[in-house]
Amino acid sequence: MPGPPIGVPWIRDVGDNPNIARDEPPPPLYSGYPPHMVGIDSSPAPEPVTVPRPTIYSGPPILGPSMSPVMFGGAGFGAPGFAWHGGAPGILPMGGFGGGFGGGFNHFGGFGGFPFGGAPVGAGFFGPIPPDQTDPSQFSGGHLPGVTVFESDSHTVIGWVKSEIEPWLLPPGSPVTVEWIHVDSHWSIDRLIKSLRGRESDLPGWTVSEIREDPHSGMWVKGNSYAFGFGPASNNTLADVYWDKNRNRIGGGSLHVYLHRA
Image (cartoon, rainbow, N blue to C red; front, side):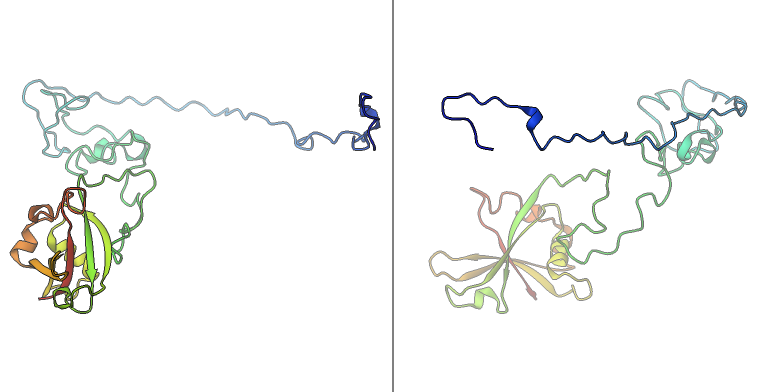
C-alpha cells in the first residue's frame, strides 16, 4: 500500500493489517495430558539400623584384623594417636570405603575407594584396559571424562630429521624433512627411540644421534649417539643429556636428532 504524500504523517491503522491472524487461538500445548500427580508411598518406614561405634584407642595405633598395615595420619579417620579397631558393617553406598568397612581398608593399601567425589567405586569403573599405544601422538585409550590429566612439568621440542641417507653424509645444502615433536623431558632416551621407531619388535640396534648444521660448511655434523638398551640410553632422561626444555627456544640452542641403525 503506498504511503501518504510527503509531509503528511503516516497514521498506522493496525486493524487494516492483513497479516493479523483473526482466528481463535490454539489450545494450550499440554491441554490433552492429565494433570501431574505426586505419588505417596504408603509402605511402612524401614526399621532403624544401629551401627556400633568403633572403639577408639589413644596412644600407638592398633590395627584391626580387616585393616591394611598402613599408618593413618592427618584429619578425619586416623588422626594422630587414633585408629579404627576391627571392621564395622559395610553401610556406605556404592561400596563405601574399600567396598564397605567389612571388607577392610585394604584397597590400594589404604582407604581406597572413597565415594565422596561423586564417582562410583569398583573395579572396571573407567572401562576396559586400554590397548598398547600404536601412535605416539595419541593418548592411548583416549581421555576419560571427569578425569584430570596431570602433565609433565617440562617438555622438549625436538627437530626429528628424516632422511634415507645419514645426514652427515649428504652434500652441503641438501634438503631434508624435519618433523617437530614435543615430548616429556623426563622420558628416558630408550622411550624416545621407541616412540620414533613406532614399534617394539626390533628396537635393539637402533640409535638416536644429535646432529647440528655447521654454519661454515653447511653440512650436518654428528654429535652424541645413544643406542637402545645400553646404559646411557636406559639410565638417562632427555634432560640428563641436556635435551631439555631450553632447546629450540630463545637463547637455548637448537636440537635436531636422527634415528638410525648403529
